[in-house]
Length: 329
Image (cartoon, rainbow, N blue to C red):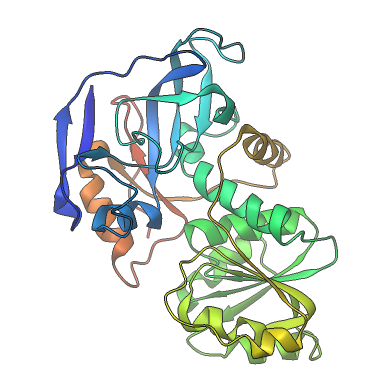
């Protein structure tokens, strides 16, 4: 099979398209023909060497799969050849999704929502699971509460807006002016152009000084540091970003706030919950650009570049027959 191999940590040129042996499913495992995968910030963080102790080189990386079951190992009862499936491979535990075939444990695989294309489904597995863990499991967002989603036009952010609206929350989000209409179409109630206005000032004005119940941080840095300023009493901050600088939590202490840091875990349950939202028309990932397996280095460079103009996710068509769409940025 063809696979994109990470030969050394470094820039996008560190990948090499190679022929490798097709994996064989063992007991409790499923072999999937990968139709599509997608690109996440975690992907370029792994590539550039942020987690060298967790990634043995050479490696097949990648963290999203949508495809069709090719074969099943002994003991597998939930799937059969021909089933359309989606999942996130176990992170830092075996080969990833930048390949024509992938083997995974039965328990982390879900049935692909029939209304989603493979490109759309592959764009939702990791970010969707992350959002579900952040908003439902950690923040316990409730009907009638308010939430600030930092970076609402991004791969995680645009999904978070939709999930929060489905949960009955009022959604604030920060974007550049070019993404205002996009996030409004995703369901955001109050859109803040962070280049023109201070998000804390806007939130305090719009909430009569109370603040929001939940802040969902996808940015980190100073954005995370200032998040307590926008919180209501007993508010919750959930961040998916590595902490790279000390945080002054005095403001958070004064708000009786709680902090949660999420590195998503894989299981079928979250995929089934996301599938239900998709079926009800409350969630649909936006694919902003599509590349081939061989062009993943180009996709990495685009996602990694500042102010890249992307909305939603970059999807990768792995199956040769998968339909390629034009870049939409």
